[in-house]
Length: 335
Length: 285
Image (tube, rainbow over all chains, first blue to last red; front, side, top):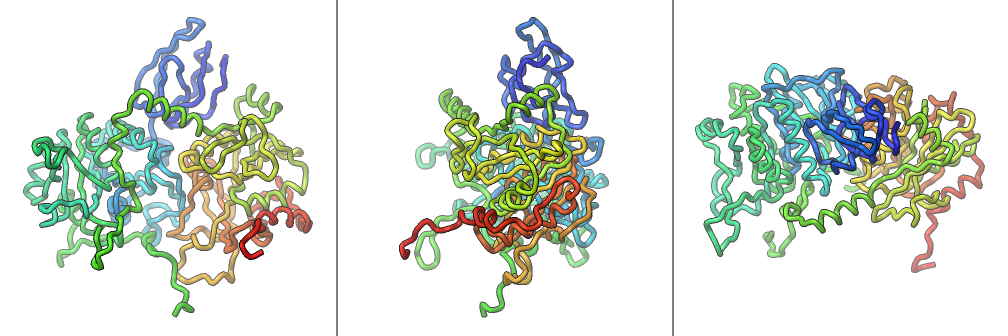
């Protein structure tokens, strides 16, 4: 018997009304696909940013002790079964200046014809919907009428590659939750390494950074063994800046202005021992398509996603959704 | 950032906010408490009339075969003029929410007054499994997901079909050929994978997208595998107008067995709905 109001439909992560119950059976409402229960526990004060699999025990006023498992996840598979990502490489973009990371992810998905395997259903992102952005010229499995949402996962089993494309900004109040949910999903999916594509404000570079390449990398301690191959490629690690410039030069900190969740996610991955590589480009807002090619070609040098042509260029395929980036056609009467 | 001519422009990003989120790491008890209170204040609540509340208490979710959600002044006007006036509908619920632009009523338990921005749910008298939602209030970005989730969670997923009607301006429509307004207003559609109905208008072409409550509803339906279709009407008039409202007629034609449409609504009804856009006063009158 449920003593208070409850929502009967399961959602992957959100926890709603308070439930005090005396009957174990009626307390459970588990959907096989989401594996989630939506309950808010007064005793344990679980908030919506709590995640990961954990067993909970709750004793209620009638001395009824209930133990059940809650698995909170944002990932919802398009098929009836959850795809396996064990040992895969995950590429995900940070919503950052110039949207370079997201454009790069678009390029990878479009060129490699990656089919969509699932959605990220979360309240941390602004909602958005549209038709298949990669349709026309092969499409990525789905036709032109396949509905696309704000965050989707694409997979390429031969290359053991998965790409999470994030199309809308992260809500200001949900940044921390989003980072935690991402880390949790990465860990539970068993990705062997994660690559975060990001960018940072070019005008914040110091004198040293103005020379040479605008590309930088960062590695979390769990992925330190990749450092050797990156150094062989001639990649530059992102420099740390003084925490108190002019006063105390010894204390350094990470500073990624315009990088969105990059710094936070990197710090979280370091703490949680997640193998993460950040590939970052200094850029400004404007026509960021050339920046995207720079970043993607740079990434390709390391991950070898695509073979170069004999002429030395990489045959990336621009998705159809990149049309009209700067607005509709111009009225002829203007001239 | 200094430019060539010497003036200083502030540089901003389309994608990210300028300030870092470091300050959020050093929150104390009071900040956490305030943040939680604001979150609770911004929570979206779906309220039902007493009869429906009783039904919900016993069975948990409402039986619904067709849910129509109209978002925007013209879509809501269409529903008022062509649908709600055709046969018996009862107001059974509303969504109460608070944000900076939608203050809601002072007491969230009171039904919104007619004419004020609101989100109202109607049930068809002859067929209680048909629901219409009329949304004319502003829903903030952080409330969109919650709103879609809570409204759709109150109805059973099995056998549910969702139709969304939404207004948009022609300026938002991207096309390679310049549209000079001769074809407007027009409809474009988006549908979820499980929707099997025939398409009455072209699908929304890339690179156009849909945001706001229609996008939240559609995303929820896509993920939950509910057949849903969205009809977006692009119009060049900013205020609700009768021509735009009429454009929605074909959108509900496939539901003609369950939802009766008023073929020609009376002039008075249309005038009342479109009168809201009269200028209060300006400097010259």
